Length: 219
Image (cartoon, rainbow, N blue to C red; front, side, top):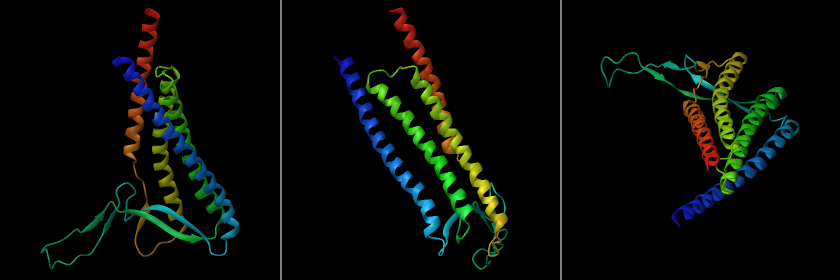
């Protein structure tokens, strides 16, 4: 009885996870649609007061590892020298009246990453739907998981590239005089490693599907 009971429990868990992903998918869909619709509307309603924009920047010199020299007193530590702030990043935020920047610079990146997020949720929902039906070794599931891994990897790399290009563009068009700023280049290593692990898992799952098919032919 333990085998059938364990299978029923696993299928019940898969159903529960799928319901959670269903709820997350529809919430993300509704919220995303509202945001996408509100951005063009605000281009007509908020022109007088300006639109809010924020761009990633590195504080100091250096995109990958910024460094900002600072002056410090020697009263506490005699011989203190070479003081600097390292790795400081933030967002350069301001109001503006540029409609192309508002629509293209703010809306387009959001739509792209929002679409990738929804696509990933759709793939996970389909995998869990097959698992809940008792078909975890459906040949389509490893392909879906492999595609999900590439989506995560592409999103992590794309986010780094987009952050650097947008940061470089805004600093080339504005003159910040109070503190030195550099284009920001953040490596999203956690997401990149997650994407690679999903690709490895997809390869293992593909092998498991092949073994399951061979076993079924043998029987």
